[in-house]
Image (cartoon, rainbow, N blue to C red):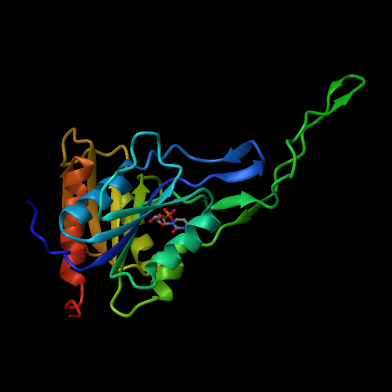
Length: 236
Ligand code: C5P
């Protein structure tokens, strides 16, 4: 049995990836399965928390069935924002593990978009116009629904000409204003060996406070340990 250091706490976890509709049958999406978010929800429940799992298109068979986990299904970034904000009102911690689309189509067509034809063949397609989605994590961090709430983000980073993955992660940690940012060094196994998942946990100032490598369950546990440390004493 895990240490019950989250007993009496309510935590919100977002998981999966949003789908932004183009028409009734098509969307812009991403490949997130939701497994890290589900591992976070399960780990929190095992440590005694009540969990609201806001699940955006989590893959079949991945969603947990657990008496302490309430699943709130959503599809789009705007739905995810509403669900997370609703659940966050009385939450001790919010962990944003979902892959939220940065952009959505300006409008979703009411009927299936059809291929148009001219005398000489198919017509040129209409361009897809996009607009920016809100940054839900940054919003939560600046406008905390509850004092003392711990707000956590995830970021997958790669090194490039402007710096290595951690340098990008540090800048993001400071920009987002969250208390913790779990930085996943994508395609970089330096120091970790060949493990399924390796993250460096940064605080809001961009300082590394923990490293975790291993399964998604192990990464989840390492993150909750950092969250639990930052929670104000439980009200009784
Ligand atoms: O900026 P980037 O997308 O890399 O940041 C990732 C973190 O921000 C994740 O925690 C993700 O859930 C969150 N995010 C968000 N709203 C967005 C984009 C990302 O909450 N529109």
